[in-house]
Amino acid sequence: MEGDLWFALLQIFKMGGHTRQILLGTSDFGRMIGVSQQTASRRLLELVESGLITRELTPDGQLVMITEKGMDAIREVYNALKMGLEGIDNVKFLNGYVFSGFGEGAYYVTKSGYREQFSEKLGFAPFPGTLNLRLRSSADIRARNELEALPGIIIKGFTNSERTYGDVKCFLAKVNDTADGAILMIHRTHYGKEVLEIIAPENLRKKFGLRDGDMVQLKVFLNRDHAAQSHLG
Image (cartoon, rainbow, N blue to C red; front, top):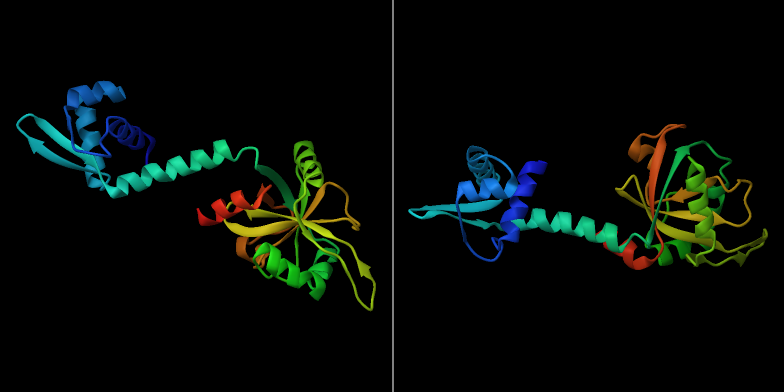
């Protein structure tokens, strides 16, 4: 929805047009939204044609009311604002560039002792490989270091005939704002603090057509509640 149309819909909402029909004159409405009477009339017609409001012409003026579609548009913006404002302390945003790694993360992901826990604790069985990101800036590295101090989701270590494997800490995440995944924080690793490894239920390189050097955005959830809200959204 265009900004001008959204602003007009918001004014009708603020007048109570989501609960009842309200009598609206184009001159008064134009003053409310800062446009001429002619533009206000056109804006109302656009709202009607978009299915966002209903309009009934009467001798006294026009009766308008927000439709369910209009309320869906308002709720969508409300939910985005609510998530952004209330969840600001529960989410970290990181950016990094794709690079080809040593296959270290894939080695861990395929171990049955870890894999079963990934399914149980993260809610998905990971694709047998990781997406490696080199963090873009000092701010991204600082955010990653802050994650080190947080509890996260612990995938317990185990021992098999080969060796002993340590705990792996994870945080659920959204990749490029659309794909579910999780970041791995492996204690024993050849990488420095500027690198993150991402697991997901699908091949992220294929999904997004990624090549080495492409930038990826991560929204990392510090608790499960906000991860669940994002998934439902």
